[in-house]
Image (tube, rainbow, N blue to C red; front, top):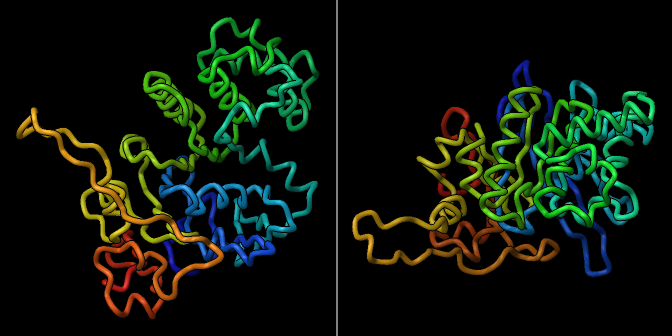
Length: 332
């Protein structure tokens, strides 16, 4: 296996040196550039990083939802329960999408079809994958809306997405994703654009449903608070690559990569020593580089506070520096 966490017998999903490139008139965009990590059955894995780091494209690549062309997915495989998803045809992929692997998309208003009722959109997946009649599938849709905490579920199944609040639409997306009891749930920023009260409710709901259904979850987020509460392991991505991977306690207690430390330092903190004095937020200077014009050497070197001359010339590899802790940095 390529660099990354060791794969155990309970591994349900494994990405092996995954690349997803987009070929454009301006050049080749390396959105995902050699990503390797694994997911265990029933585990919650956090994938973090700034916007544009490749988190969402990695998840879309797992489900082969990247349009080809201009996209191109290649590597050593996306292994789900022993099957390489990159080798399956369209019919075989449809049997897996929404059935064994589901995804909660980032923006529910653009992911839900405005011309169909919420109930029909949930029932459609159940009819397709489980062979239920329309009546039974609509009953199942109402049960799922009730399960995710939407009041008056029998009424809501007949309503359209624009008739639901943002929080309800997000819950409906979760109900749709979980309607076929998938083995893996890809949750792409599931609490974005929701107020903090609804965020907490959605988070509690996902944890509760995971415990009840045994679903493995890949949580894609920039909210390190969510990661600290829910995830067992964390993968940190930057410029299409994994730059650090470790158990959650290790990431928060002993971050090694300068980018990971920058993310943690940018979290707001309470000044317990002097409550009246404000603590200025630290920032990671600069922006994520264009993925079709990456700098020579380490991709993070233009922004790194610890950059050395060797960082400008050599691209680091992902190496295991302690059991289960991997980092892509020439300092190690």
